[in-house]
Image (cartoon, rainbow, N blue to C red; front, side, top):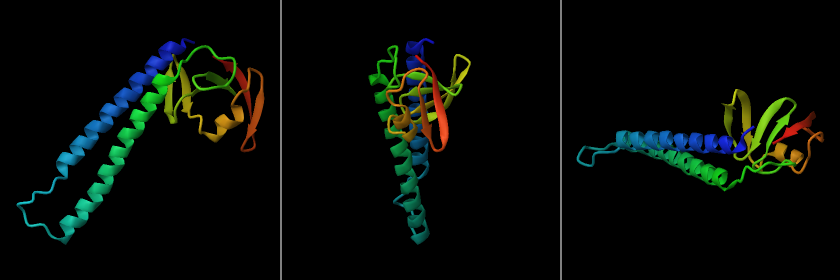
Length: 147
């Protein structure tokens, strides 16, 4: 498995997500501007407060994705012998990349899940080697491969 290509894929994917989220935010902001020349009643103000909360949530998502991008770029993705940041692991025939908490994705025909070092499952697997096992939430996880 070419981890450098995986890193490039993750960076491109995160950059694309940032662009889409920023476009949604900009579109939303443009559509919610109050015209100060119009008469504004209580209902308008209530809707504006709701829109402000949604705008803040979208803005927060943009910042989170920028942070994810920075985290991915900082990882070396060098070959690993233990479960550590930047490692790709095969656990119970499922692939995981230790990077950021993001959605599932497909790379080189394999389904992946990206997990953060803050994820409880990572704490169970941290430092483990190929063939090691850990138990989490009543399930046993065997580290089949580490890349």
